[in-house]
Length: 315
Length: 257
Image 1 (tube, rainbow over the protein chains, first blue to last red):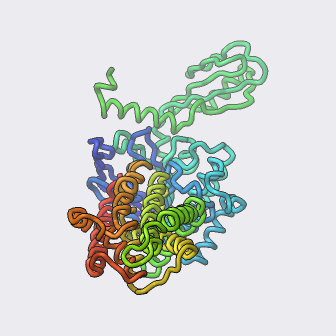
Image 2 (image 1 turned 60 degrees about the vertical axis):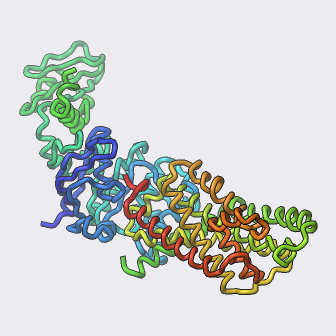
Image 3 (image 1 turned 120 degrees about the horizontal axis):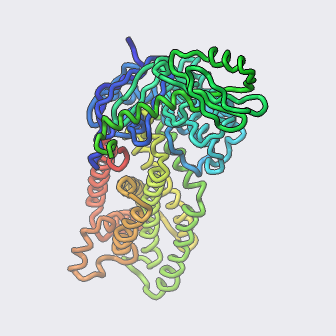
């Protein structure tokens, strides 16, 4: 079956001797919205660098829509758009020029390039800034500029390396909507992110990389099913006279108006509410103490720390 | 990429380069004009009037081709070295590296950008020179060919310098310690026939001497060294530097991790 991205036994050893990738393999299917998670230095950016040709691989194979980058990198690059983690455009150039030039590097005729540029800048709310030098843009605008630039040649696979880092909540949500929209239109999207809420909200499948190896590669849904317990915070109406006692559940009082409840896999929230109702405690709101994916992520990375570096983990 | 797509990519790079040096014309096009005015006033009028003739022509006529050539080669070099290094420094070079644009098109685009600035400065300096002396071109083809090949050669050299450079100091070292001395000792201000035999022999190893001399031949019809040697030298150096630059792009040295 055809894949949008196929990575086989990919290794990267830098000149310093650092082994950034230790033979990782990964398949991303066409149309997927795929998250690559991992702590800093895990190898995520190296992986993206190899796929986009900015990093030379030591060994292994990479295929983009069945085109091997060793056989026909030019064709593979036509299918790929990359939004890097750090700003990498000329700060002296105008917004429109940056996107137009990128279209030119992909061989798009001028008229077509102008049309695509106008469309993307409008969609990403940057059209009013088209004549502004890039250095004058806010951080969020710069991120959107890089997305417009990556999409100008209409790639089938879009890779975003932490696209919403440093972006305010409102803008992040609008970028999520935009990414969902282009994914629904058929673009395969791979993103790395530190916001695990982002991965949970947007992505269907996820790979967790740590110390240059893939710790987990599955669907977000099945990953969340591995969660053994969740902690919920309950806010009560009025003042809490004392910490209620719920049979079968551990509770911790946080303040006069709230407490947290640990719900182990298999236990029901209905039972929690039933006992609270019996005790005439009115709940006005409820939320997860931490992002569910975040809890899993931390658990997996910690577990891998013992495997990757047992001495350090013991000390 | 199809040939048409490659052409689009090439035009894009050239357009970007021309836009860049015209946008900052105060830094790129104006200084050579001011420098040349000073050269012509000092060496042409003040000092030149006391020197008299050199190589059978007035001193101001003698130095004019060398000064034009000096402006062309330094600007062609500076354009590519500063533009490509800035792109490396700001990481905007990644825009083109991740694209399917072939290496030969990247090199050609930057080199033609350097040639464009070199020739633009050449025209400006020639116009300045015409205010001080009656310039005429004796051999049009030789004049233009030598000028073009020199601009190509120094654009290539600037590109290689930019690839190797790690900081802005690295792109000023070669012009300061290599290009300027070779140019000043390359017969711009004097005929090498005035030098003692030992220095004449040593000067023959200075590649810029032959370029300046051939260009002077094209304009004034006088030369100290052989014209054929200048053509062969330029041809060989352009081929060698092109191969070096393409090797650097292919290997990704200093460009890809």
